[in-house]
Image 1 (spheres, rainbow, N blue to C red):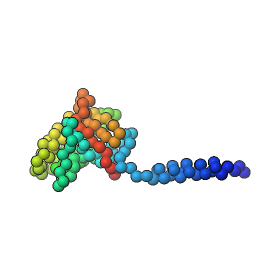
Image 2 (cartoon, rainbow, N blue to C red):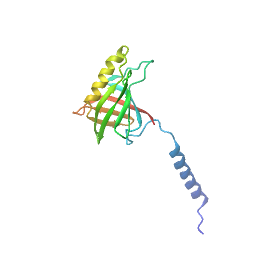
Image 3 (cartoon, rainbow, N blue to C red):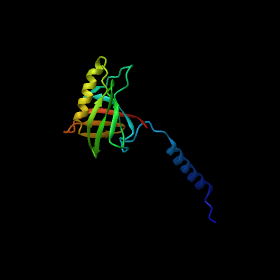
Image 4 (cartoon, one colour):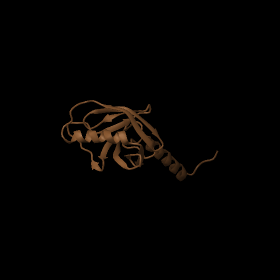
Length: 149
């Protein structure tokens, strides 16, 4: 029977333990190689301006599912619809919202957000950020991954 030296056994045990514990660590944002599906994407900027967040409202966000549906919020109203994603191509269709009146700056942001979603044709990833782009690959909005479901 072959016996490993104590120092090698300890090194291998440490490596195995680190690997095991690393696999159990929680994630708060996906790596850029992870799917955009089942991730909470919070609107960070729209047309180069910071997103408006009202204390009494849910922040603007999107969540994509594997069946091609998207849901989220405009920052005022709930949002739902369909999306198509292949490679760096992304488009939205059949988008609808609830119809609550939006206070102040949220009304303008809601209209701009819906316009951006209708013009989105590409996406790019930059770390934990998702950039929605138009047909000429110009940035329209930036979203940040804040949690995994």
